[in-house]
Structures are given as C-alpha cells and as structure tokens.
Amino acid sequence: MSALPRVPYTRLAAEAFKSLLATSKAVHDSSSDPVLMELVFLRVSQINGCGYCLDMHGTTLRKGGIEPRKLDTLPAWHESRFFDARERAALGWAEALTRLSSAAPSDAAYEALLPHFDEKGISDLSMGIAVINAWNRLGAGLLPPLP
Image (tube, helix red, strand yellow):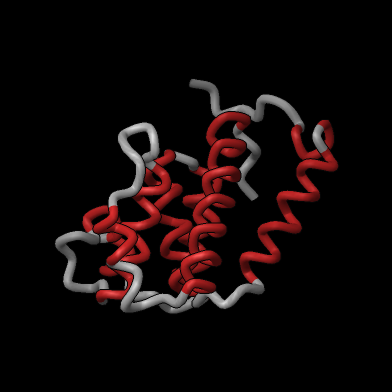
C-alpha cells in the first residue's frame, strides 16, 4: 500500500470536514476526562489501523506524562495492571462500539459503564468513540500526511 495521500478531502469536502472538526471540539469540551478520552481514541485508532491518529493521540498522551508502560500495554488492557476499573469500562465500550461488524455491544459492556459514568458521561464517551471512528476512516482510507 502506498503511504501517499489519496485525495485532499479537507478541501474537497470542506463543509463536512468543518462540521466534523466542530463535533470533535464539542467532544473535547464535554464532561469527559481528557486523558481517558485520549486513551480511548488511541485504542480505537489501534483497532482501525489509522497511522495518523495513532501518531497524534500517542504523542498527546506521552506529552501529557502517561506512563510508557501503560501505553505499551494498551492493546492488552484486559490483562494489564495499569488500567483501573473506570478505564477498563470505557475501553471495553470503545471496543464494542468500534467492532459493530462482529456484534452489537453486549449488555455486560454497557452495564460495566454504570458504576463509573452517569448518562451524560456515557453519552459523551459514546460520541467521542463515534467521532474517532469517523476520523480513523478518513485517516486510514485517504492517508493524510503526518504532521
């Protein structure tokens, strides 16, 4: 596969791009913990294979002082001791919403959120997961150049 950009979608689909940026800003301005959301963004980007988003969110987390061992074990968060129950619930939900082609999210994945998030938190987290999945599809599909 070529690593060259495919189309300048930010220019050719400018209005949709601006709307997606506005939605991303709303997610970042929401009730969600920014570090948790970055972990979710990085995990979803790992699943989707988006190099652009992996670079961006990994860099943000490293600059924010996240322990390297935590980042190194993110793909195996299920068994890593570096993730607390709240993070595990969010990451489980992120994986369930990202892998919809396998099955709809289970009741267990949803119920794991309830001790850690109120309805607004679940809504904001779910919106963040939806937004990063949209960005991943643009990044993995259209290959924008890395900054």
